[in-house]
Image 1: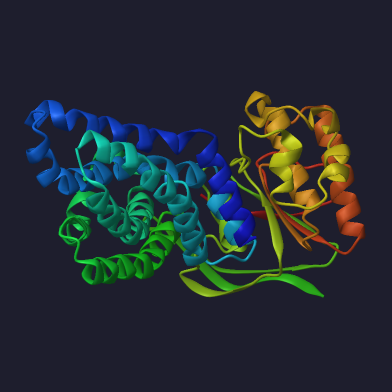
Image 2: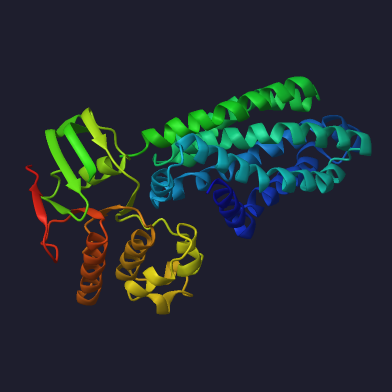
Length: 205
Length: 182
């Protein structure tokens, strides 16, 4: 059942919704040279940080579709009746969300690095940091999605909640402090299923 | 054999006590209708029986169960058969029993509310769970749908299953009735 749930969520993402954050990520990156000027030396100096800002903002986009549609449609209830714990459901949703977000983002980072005049070595470093950080970011997005599911203006609220909580990922990722980035990402990935599970339970009325 | 047991159960929702000291036992082959005016807590009782709500006091014992309520819980972009097969390995005979096998290839988003009701009942019928929980099963069903539902209910009961249904209108067949007060 868990594998079926992950496969279903990946299918739903990959056949449409998952491409929007990636397009948004590339768009934000493409705006940067317009905003700070096309000076390649300046861009390459701040490029890694810009990649991370684009990553964080694009992570906001899918939040509204991660939990709320399944809550409103009764899918979460039916999954619970199949004997799945809400934490397990959340874990499956985190895995599926990362699968449709992380790898695509890592690929999109390649053209993005060209737009930001990053050289190969900087790109490689950024890719490794993104690979480590995106599971934490995906887990955080699912937890925030569960906490805000069913609330009015959930999308805006999710932004206010997610961005501050993602700051450690941003700091250590952009600074390429890989061990600290891994620690934060692990903490978020390990904690998010419990937060999301409790939020799903509390949202049942 | 008792399938569903409520032992002095109290349920509170939004600060309001819906009922307390509720005892009920549902054995194999039995069917119980929860009746009562709008807002008396029929759906809440069903969700409590399903384990989706927590009792405030008392104890509920439940077997494996299947629930059909107003939520469709089917992926709208998929065909009806594919969407149902996420929940059940063999939905074909249940589709047939509800008279919607000709819709197997139609995307869920194109189905009418009566057809969706039949689809949620088909999920229950395909579940093989001993206890069925039905919340307003007659809503949106036409005469043919109601007949098919009555037949399924009879088969389930004679196969040793039990049914708890919430409905404000009489259900076809022979039911014990539990009347909830406002």
